[in-house]
Amino acid sequence: MTPNRDLAALRESLRVVYRDLAEDVARAGPVCQLSGRCCRFAEYDHTLFLSGPEAEILLADAPPPTRSLDDGLTCPWQDARNHCTAREARPLGCRVYYCEQSYQDRSHELSEIYLARLRSIAETFDHPWTYAPLHWHLTRAIEEGRYPGSTPAREEPAELDSPNF
Picture 1 (cartoon, rainbow, N blue to C red):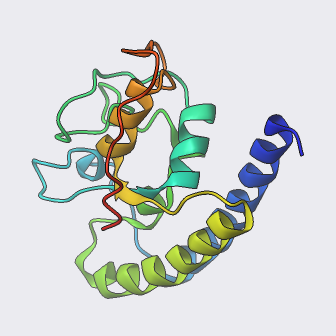
Picture 2: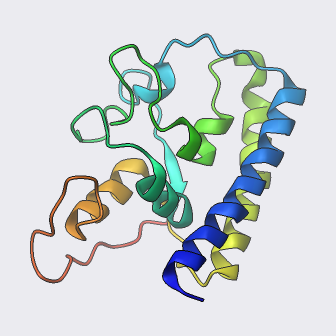
Picture 3: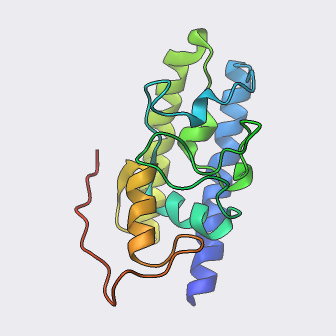
């Protein structure tokens, strides 16, 4: 397969997972209040984790970030109205996260179910399994010149340890 074809197949595999997740989340019934708390990580004491395949699609499909990259305080795709500008390309962690307290247990259950599916996709595409904070992936993308608007800092990217939390 060509790299573009691999990316298209990866995108389609993730689309199926995200569609199934959306159905399960809808059955659980949480309501988004559009508060933007999901994207303000430090302020609300949470971290967005995503897999390597999701990071690849996020970087390929999302529009340019609306904020500068910080040290993990916020999502760079949250706009001034607290809305997500990467909605279609957002990873599983964004799709399963809701502030509603009554949904939290189900959120964790769904995360585990769908993380297993993401790991299977990574294996199918021979993609190294990395499950790390968003900013870990974005820092790596900057080093490799894959972050929107970035250029590689050196000819070869720095070796970053894969945290696999």
